[in-house]
Length: 454
Image (spheres, rainbow, N blue to C red):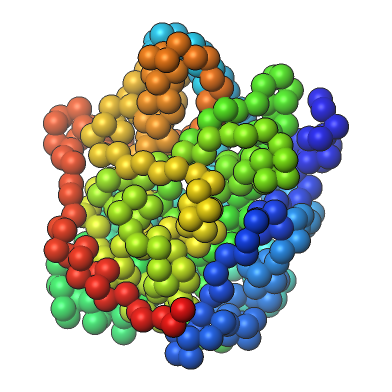
């Protein structure tokens, strides 16, 4: 193993630190603004929602942030996660490319989400918090926070986007098994939810709406803090255990990626696999192409505007500069519920603005087709979200075949699809359609972006 990567991992093969890409950026990301004053926010502005330890990580510019031993102790249950080479898929595609995938489906909840749920629960417990409120799309984040809450003795309240609540009953059951309470959003339990239902009684919900409900509960109760499963800097930070492990594992195999592919909704699993490699590149290391893949029905990176916007529909959160479709935008009800967010993580958006990554959008049915092809070759059924990364990796491999070039491709298989088999059944029955958004609704949402002084 080379000296440059040996320091990354502890004796158990688990990273000692989270990697903070803010330390290596050629220019800092735009400030986060107070929604009332339009001025940069300070720690006190975030204190009603987050413990100070997480606020400190949110604004940190230190390259390495030590992972607390109680967190690493929980990580040991599934970390390091395996890195596989997709040899049978390579053979099936007839490509000269080498395809590797980091498999996060080995966690207790079957996705990458516990990587941040565990530290968030830990820091809240340390701060004396009794309850966490949160939102979830497909339910992978909600079930992961429910698990982490059970480990550290915290109550967990989850507002689950209604369309996913209806599509994925077993994810709700998993949350309840871990002791959490799961509510379909929009709900009658909050002012934000009631306002949406009054205007749109049959609303399918969105992550922006569910965030509004969870933030409202946290802001109004002193014993409750808010936990977020993606988008914010500290969440992306926690996920970098993925890329650091992959870097060491590839080094053991004597390889290094030419292309990295990740699916993007809020940006956390993508950041987890890509940020350590981007940081290496920014510090003078090997160049690598970074490909962010998103759903065509919710294309924030490819169709959104890079502008200041609210993170939630009720417009209660701070203003962040990100690629956004508008906080009032409600995507159609496609099955990759974890990718139905109107905005992209500010740090991912900043990297896109710096042209350090490229983005592409795929339709639902072509992603499921890629997921089935992958499952039949590699015997792992991807979650609907992860099929986007699979599709992106297959396209890159076929491009290598056309060009006669043998590149090394790495992608993050961020979760398994065992709770999503109804979606696969619908695909095989021809019931899945490529849902599209209303262009006029998108234009209206973008027209409603807040006015922010330069």
